[in-house]
Image (cartoon, rainbow, N blue to C red; front, side, top):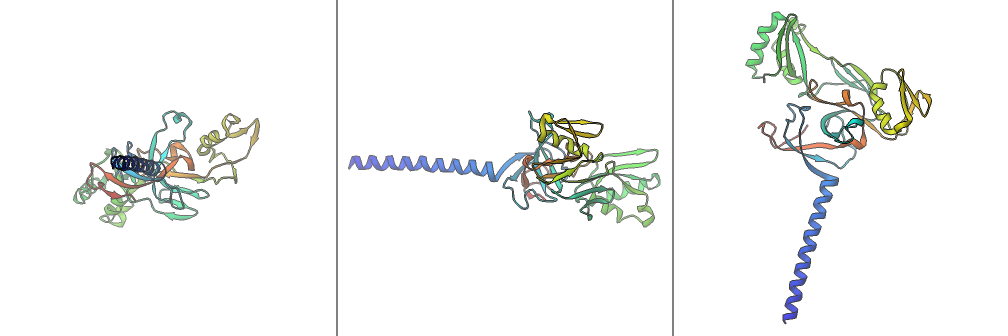
Length: 289
């Protein structure tokens, strides 16, 4: 009987260890392949996410991950960042094969207008005559105070796209003509798809250069706005990966494809899915859109 009892205890202990081992393996697999928590360390998505927020990231890539217009966690593709591999947060606005245009009216994907996301921050210039009214309107609407500066040619302030919509609703048609969004970066680019020859041109090469260096290594050289591949000038390059374009909601401070160039698929960790902790009550425990 004693031997039988010892065997039962031994079997129970083995089952206990196996159970814990399985649990550890499941947790590891979930963290590595499916879902993992990260702390946000940048201001790129201000008003959508804040610095030091904790978020869950869906790492299971599929049809909608990464998805167009979704907030994504990505690893910097810049060669100078390969040792530190900083994690960045931005919004995916262009998918492989898309033609992306960014203008003052918003961005266009394959010729279709896509308004700027409501939380995207831009700088606006308002005429001097409207300055006092704008300050009164923003105060009445309870809008947060960001950058504001009075210069000789007008009042400059930072507003989100949605806040701008609210402010414009308080202005007359004539006054709206004196309310101007400042877009320093206007550009157009076709995003590469893997295994399809891509035509290189002077206007798109700066956005592509880092990605070409990543793929071709020492074989790639650039001279006078041209690609020299293995000693031969080339007007085409065939990428081995799909590429996306990301644009931060905080366009004035955020780091995105304007600085990083096109983003390879294997540098996108996944969609930022849920904010489970934030000091900002408006962002605490919420789905990320």
